[in-house]
Length: 144
Image (cartoon, rainbow, N blue to C red; front, side, top):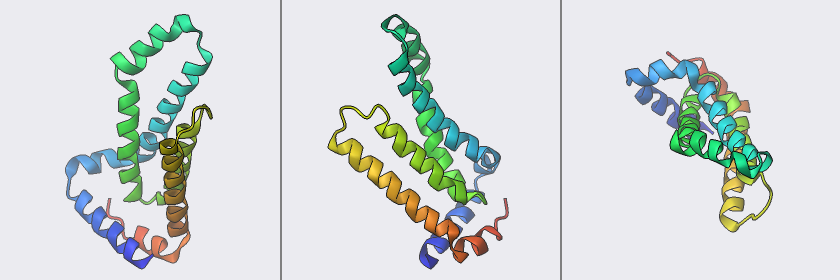
């Protein structure tokens, strides 16, 4: 944990030097959970909307690339939450994304299962890190 805490500290120092990162940092949880929410909404709408509504879903999530914006917002939210004081919420975001990967629970392939398992394991490791004393001393030194 000590090595990971030093890596996070150095990553935080590097990202703090970028002005646009400091501008986006207050929205890290919005990006993290909003990205997961958009992806879940897309999967849910594909399941519950009748076939005649697929044109509207295609327009919203593909022509206006809302799905891609949600995905990249989720990835940016991961990095911003990792270097923020609220690192304790990051495992929940990773576990929610693992659920979204598996959501329809049909046609599960090896890639989907392995990806979900990796997100769950990374979430568990970050959960252990956020509960450790290294995380508590590391988040006190945040200068954002």
